[in-house]
Length: 472
Image (cartoon, rainbow, N blue to C red; front, side, top):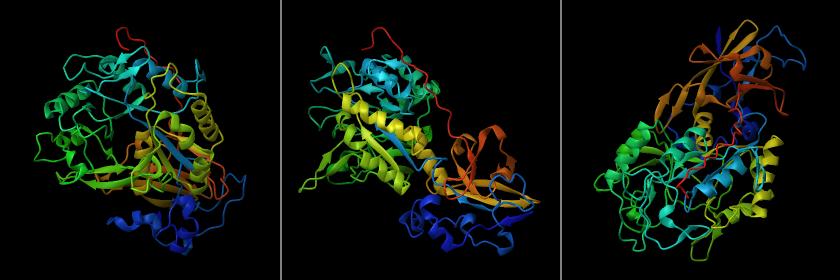
């Protein structure tokens, strides 16, 4: 057997949009100090062979593996809906996700069967005088694990189940700590410790964190500065009594939205490394939050549920499909205190998104899945070995510049796809171990080449809605 060194630099430039979605001169490629992946090395001429004609099942020569496809076949883009838990109640949450995630008949129409996960709070420490649902439901009845900031469970059993079912994948900080007087807070490190211990005990491990609220939410982190507006973010400041990331990151959080506005809809990559004041490293990620900026530089926010038609506009969706990009839209699915959480324009926008997925253009994935895929696809290392007339793609590891080198699990590899001129005679291994055939799929050409890859997650359209007496 011999090791294939597939691809010249010139070829990489020509195929960039499909294989990598960016120029080889992109900032992401320049920024890493890691060694160049082996699949970026020049081809040995003796390995270059003619392509197998369509329909030929066996060729006397080993296939040529051409590189990693940007997105799972047949999709040209990937999009996540990242919803913040503000004003969440069980009633609104159920209505929203029955429609978005299941294929049941719902009050807003037939469910769409999309993979959209939400966020949640562990605590409610807000004293803002407002309502959170129809019939004047007070903010104290916002959907949270604990009642207030006590250790008394409120919606704990419901939230625990929704995490396991995949309807929740994000911590929207530890809780809603927004106060009328933003110089005050009820957050403590002890609340963080209890929250993490509780999640561990219940087997609930979340990898995504999104910052929340006003300056009373001192547990926010990722954008901390010693002076200025972001100085209130104390979660990663080891000299602060509110320091908690030495608990949170070992627990398993890998990705943080660091309260950063962005009017960029599609991106080649959604992730960027953050070094915290504590010296810890974590992945930051971008969300589309605003349509632009005022003359004074303030964001023109576009992240309420009523903004969904603008966020999911035909122009935006065509843009990411044409440019082979990721997108994560920020929203607040439960923010409206209306009887139905979605208006007709919002329903139609989500229906159009479903059409784009069914047409094989845009894959809709929960935020945690998109971000994990982004890391693995971007930093994957592999070699190609030849034996007789077969080629073996051997996945060696992921050179993650934030959390370090690791050998991916089979679960990490959902959707990873390799272009090859003959998928029938191409197989995949992980660190020398063959991948079970039922986890792989072989694909016809997408206009560039055929491919072989890991299947994406099987659709789960079960209606998991829970009715819980005493929970609003």
